[in-house]
Structure formats: structure tokens, C-alpha cells
Image 1 (tube, rainbow, N blue to C red):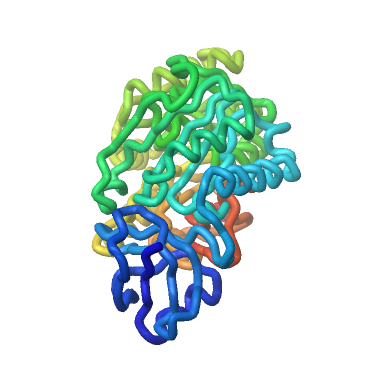
Image 2: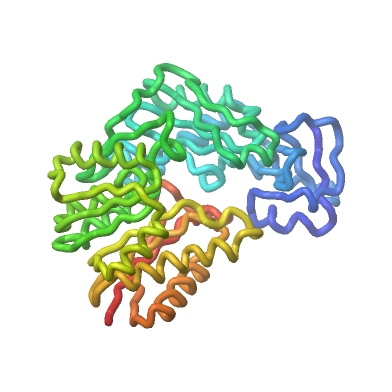
Length: 396
């Protein structure tokens, strides 16, 4: 077994069970490990620290599989990790509430670089690290021990793989090809999911609780759902007895699926409208026309994907919130979100405060929102808290 010896003093994060080591912390590598292989990670003194997957092509050079000296990273290891993940979700009653949920949330479930979403009897796997790539076959075998899936489909078509020098990959790993439209449910809502071509793994399971909040507060309100994708928040608002819903997205195919989702939930066509447009431009147009909405949802894609574009992304978040405050009457609600992990909860709240100040309105944060319980946050890995949300009321 190859060894990675850390520089003196660079073992502190591992002693706190954080699962990442960057290349600058590595003193030397003993042996000739291939990219993604499991290595023994040791302190400069030679003391054992962990077993990790080595990615020699990435700045994030080590992702830790286990801190246990006697651990073996094989099919049984993955099977036990997945069993623990399943038990956690069952204890939280998530599979009972929804047929679309996250089974494995990467580092938060002790399997770095591995994300698995469940849609009925289909498992959708996304591998983003060299270590995960090496263990693809063992992972599939472990999944099959867990449940008799109708199909296991891979959606490793994410840009982050380029940092590990891995090609993007999609396709069936076991069983059947998913249908173009798979019907799933969460609480009282139903949705079609396109596993093969949809965003991420086909759907945003992480917004389940926030959709329920929007549904709860939508009664008798005119709702504007921006960056709507396939209409998840819009369907929730309509089922919450909103007077009407406008979904806005730049993707016409996404809005076609949104229309199908409204029909699936038996929502009359006169109660909603789908508009293909740039959301930032649409906000400005509405402001120019002095339109008002009682509830606005802002759920943009990741606007900050690196420190290099932090300022640009934060300005975009602020601009969208500023324009939204101008469209809200007193008592109006803004549900605003960031899925950018680099944007902290404190920074996101400050952006909202600055936007309210520039809009010269008195606003109150009445609830903090975030990812559902099937997207847990390990106490040793706070970076897993990527989704931030605020429910803000305009008071004047």
C-alpha cells in the first residue's frame, strides 16, 4: 500500500476528522499509486491518520474514506456506508414522504465524491472524484445489495470532473434506461423528472422543505417564480391556493415540463403562466411597468462557483433581490436562495440587507431555509451546508 506523508503540522484537520487534504499539505508520496487509488495517510512522524483516495491531478489531493486503522475500502465498505445512509433517511421518514430523495450526500455520508439520488426504483449516481471513479463497480454492487433497483443510471456529466482530469460520463450502470418522464411525489405534490437530460440528477430534491414553506404561505397571493426550471415552487404555490402563478425561466424545454407538472397536479391553465425570458431582464421590465407581486421566489443557479467571481456573483444576487423588493407590496414575501457553497449564511443575509437598504424598504427575515434532511451536514464537514435560503417580509 502506498503512503502519503504530510508536512509537519498539517495533520490538524484530519485529527478533527475533516475529510479533505490539499496538495500543499503533502510532504512526500511513497510508492507509485495510480490516480484515485487508496493510500495510507500519515503524519510527518509516521503516525497513521486515515485511508484516503489520492488525486494527483487536483489541488484537492486527498479525500478521506476512513479514519479507522483496520478499514478495508472494498465492496463491503461501500455496502455498509450505503446501509447507514438508508437507515438515516428511514429514521427521518423521508422515503415515506417522498419518492424523490437523496440517498448519499457525498462527504456528509462518508463517501466523498459520491452522490446518489433516488427516484422511485431508479438510483442516479454522480461521481466527481478520482477515488469514486476507481470504485465505480464496487459501488454498483453495493447498491444492488441495498435494494432491487429497476435501474441504476450515471449522471457524472458535471464540469467539476475536469479538475480531477476525468471525462464527463453518463449511461446505464445496471438494469433499465429511465423513461423520459418519471412521475415522482413529495407530500401532496407530484412532478415529472427527466433523469437523462434534466439538471443535476433530474430534479432538485434539496428544496423539498422550502417548496412546502412556499405552499404554506401562498394562499390568495399573486406569485412570481423566477429561475423556475420545471415549476417546482410554482406548483407548490398553486397547490397552496395562490391566486395566480407566473413561472419565468430562460429554458423553453424546462417550461414545457413545468406545464406538464401543473397539468399533472390538476391545476387549471388559467391559474398560471409560463414565460421564457432572462429573469434579471424580466425583473427590470416588471419594475418599469410598476407591477406588484405578493410572493416572489428567487432560486437562481450557482452564481458563485469560485473565489475569482465572488464579487460578480454577489452583485447578481443583490441585484435580483433589490429588483424584487421593488415589486413587493407591504406584507409581501420574498423567498431567496443561494446554492453557492462559497457564499456563507452570514454573507447571504448581508446581501439581502444591502438590497433592502438600497430599495429603501423595511424588511424582516422571518425564517431561514436550507437543504432537506436527506442532504445532511456532518459536524466535521460544515462545507456540506451549501444551500442557503431566506424568507423575507417587506413591512412598508
